[in-house]
Image 1: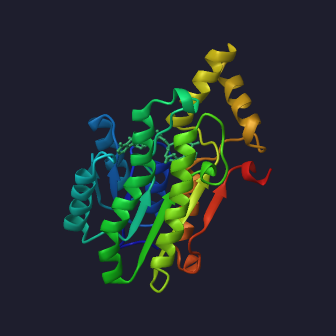
Image 2 (image 1 turned 90 degrees about the vertical axis):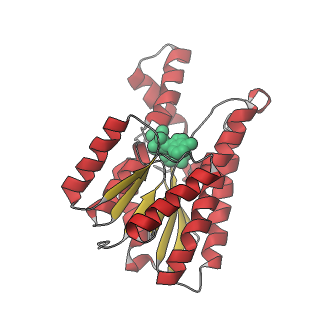
Amino acid sequence: SLVGKTALVTGSTSGIGLGIARSLAAEGANICLNGFGDLQEIAALRAAIEHEFQVKTIYSNADMTQTSQIAEMMTQAQNEFGGVDILVNNAGIQHVAAIEDFPVEKWDAIIAINLSSAFHTTRLALPSMRAKNWGRIINVASVHGLVASAQKSAYVAAKHGLVGFTKTTALETADSAITCNAICPGFVLTPLVQKQVDARAERDNISNEEAKKSLLSEKQPSGEFVTPEQLGALAVFFCSDAATQIRGVAWNMDGGWVAQ
Ligand code: NAD
């Protein structure tokens, strides 16, 4: 059980981050939510988590491109809950374009949100984890941390970087009860992927359902999306005592994508 622990999940107002936050709350962890969105909807997400799982939540709107806002978020978690025991670096964005057409500001934003923010949260979370000699750091990378796809240069670079950062973090904490691992999802039907489905439906003049099938059939042998709930269950396992000696892995949950 994670009762008495605090989990901070970046980018948890939607998609995978929200799924992981809810799974950790179901085990009893208090939750620090982060991400963008409609404030009333976010208040409703918090109320639902608090009511369903009898835990406390806080919310930070910190922008993961802004180092000072990340620091404020970590201070807020320290003040409210006495530190972060479980850090899930999940915030991420995607942009699809060929390298020579890739908008420079999109490259910078993807590296900042998908990679550098994990460095900042980790460096600020480690002191209190070390003081308590317990911690779990889970980096939500991607199959694109293990293999590449065309048109996703910034994302692939950031996610490969995040897998590398995961290994270094695991080594630097190897003599403690703090572990660091990465989760590498295949396609999950979140707003991030729905954009790619919409682009394909428009490009090929096909329906939403056909575009989903077509996207999956290119990469994901199961032909089915991974779900945020399945990823949440893997995160819960990484937090368990049984996972204490799992350190520095990049674990794919991808319907067979990387097996090919
Ligand atoms: P999503 O768009 O549903 O959620 C992204 C979350 O990040 C939202 O809460 C959003 O508000 C937040 N966010 C975006 N920019 C931010 C910023 N600058 N500062 C703070 N928060 C910000 O996307 P998702 O699919 O749930 O993606 C979550 C993570 O999973 C990402 O790192 C993504 O790369 C990764 N991932 C997704 C898939 C997939 O198929 N959906 C596959 C592999 C990996």
